[in-house]
Image 1 (spheres, rainbow, N blue to C red):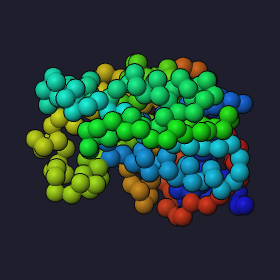
Image 2: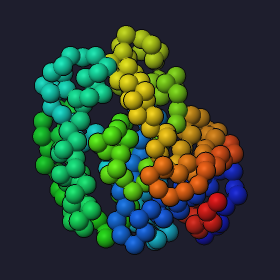
Image 3: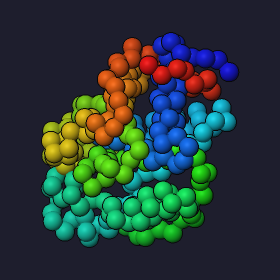
Image 4: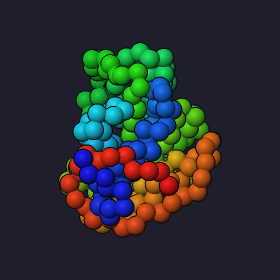
Amino acid sequence: MPNTNGDGTRAAVLCRLLSQVRESAAGGRSLVAIDGLDGAGKSVLAEELVQLAAQDGLRPVASLSIDGFHHPRSVRYTNGRGPDSFYRDSYDYEAFIRSVVIPFKQGASVVPSFWDVDADVTVLPAQLDLPQNCVLLVDGIFLHRPELRDLWDASVWVQVPFTVSVPRGNERIPGTYDSDPESQSNHRYVGGQRLYLAECSPWKSATWIFDNEDLELPPCGDSLRSQRGTQGPRTQLPRTRRQPTKACQSPPLD
């Protein structure tokens, strides 16, 4: 397998991030958040890391989304349809902790989702059995809010501006929302995320910052260490050429 250390491709950046993610809570299970704005590319990044990890046979990596733990629609809109209710009432964090965090940390199987937000009904998926040395990536918005921040062994902040995240996210449901972040159709969602940024400054708590603004030529910073623990300064990686992701040898850490 090629050693991509020093290579300027996206694959090389992903190899570096994967290597460092695998260092978290070494010797046991590790819970890692992938946080960012809606449309930042969090789920895609998680899937890229899972696929890359599957190629080298080293420490296993799996993923799930906080989106499987929405509150029912009746709860989400109890306090109105403004930004505040989007930020404060969207997710059932108690269900997430009960279904994922506690069993995962105890070495048991996890329930990867609880609620189908589109159908607005409960779901009963099969339990997910994971290896005892697994890294579990959890992607979603608002993952550095105070009641979640200390659950993670490490975390990634996927950095993009609203001018990129809103049109990118809205591509999933074309014609439903305006691509302008300041549009009234985006008021609830952009406003709620601005509340989160103002209250929590998630990039300050993240272990790594992954700059995902330009998918073809992304500048990436991957070594912003958490203030909870361990260590060193931010390292800004150079702009990278996007190429297909291949298996990689783990490069040395900075």
